[in-house]
Length: 283
Image (cartoon, rainbow, N blue to C red; front, top):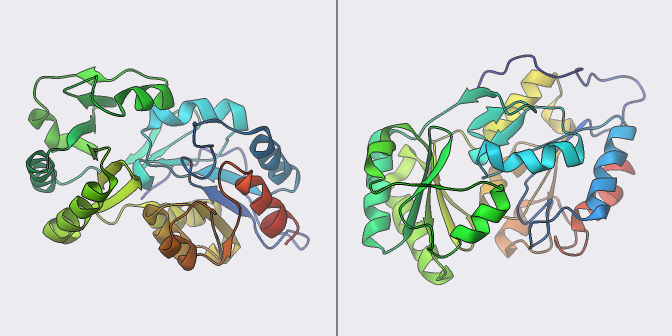
């Protein structure tokens, strides 16, 4: 990934710098509560990072527009990762770099989702596209993104320029089975992860949150050992593997917690703020 030099300053090492120079956080299930709100403790924790001279940014499965409510609330000034890090955006939401799903893989993923009876969303051309605006979780996504979907009769014309495809189901067990089957079928042609128990994401291969950590490390001149990451889902594990300090939320699955170097409280119990205080600022 190539980044433009858009930051106000580079976070360079100085003799009195803290061990951690940059924190990268997942959003849903980590930075925000279950009802998609920023807790006051979270906002205060991000402010403490700034006062300590520690950079902060986010990597999320959300599209760029879904990051907008967080930018002003948290005074975000560094590049952010949308679509699991495969699209990099500036704080003004300008696209810095974008990777798309290979068209053949996108078509096969959608065919398999259709066969499995999943509702399907396609994020392409800067829009959230779907066929049924009243399907399960569409209203939740509308409120989360603070944006309305584009209703189209046919998603297939969008598949040669899709940044993310989502299979949606209220049946978590069925979606877990679909995840395994689709991941096996597509192999290295796409990244397949559930970002929530009810969302199965298809994103560009090899351009996930781990790559986002590498991109920020290069862009800011910060060794990965001085980067801390926080997350709650399987799509955060590659980010954990590329950072010096990884922190799983208490609401994360056991396998995700096992992949992290530290575990904090859950996202409804100020887990993000506790992690910042326990493992980063006072580290």
